[in-house]
Image (cartoon, rainbow, N blue to C red; front, side, top):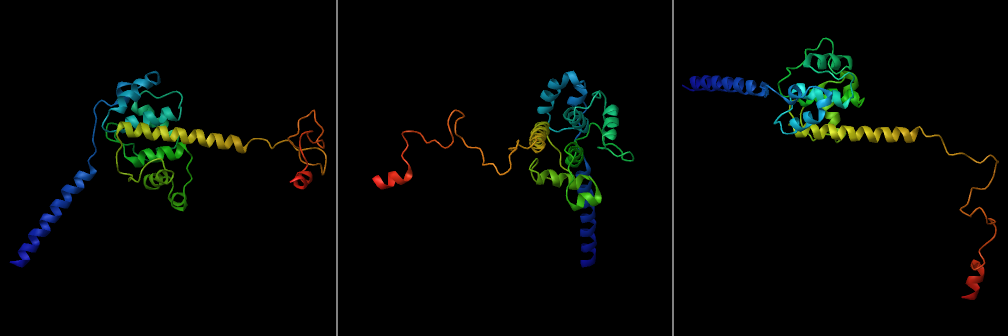
Length: 223
């Protein structure tokens, strides 16, 4: 009796695990995402407006938005063209099958693309295994661009737009720091051993004190 009960519970557990596994592998699909409605670069404002209210960002939306961020020219107008552009940029490897265009984009796929856009080098794990979804997602979390989510999670349209906004801001900061580091050093005085410049106006002698200023010694004596 006990053995039969254990076998029954084992069978139920296997069946439950199978159902759960199918559920984890299921992705939300949208038949007419924003990228299909507004595929041209001239329609970018309409694309962002439509994407903002979508419950999820599809792979087609993600690639379209990422290529707009990367200012890819000419801007692809179809899913096949976007995949080809992504392969040229290294976002999708030559032997890698692209994701389904109308399925919700996984964070890991988006993170890999952004790691290329930002030229993220990562730590030891990324240097050993390359820009794979797990480590690229962790790097974006470490950089403060996304919260602590996994590479399998999806983003809503509004969340994806917010992420690209944060990435664009990060790019501006990186460019500003790079420009600062490339600035030529301030011109030094040609005379060796010369005293550093003072704030004395050009029409005054550096050694002359203002008439109404009392030297420290006299002031102390007067007190």
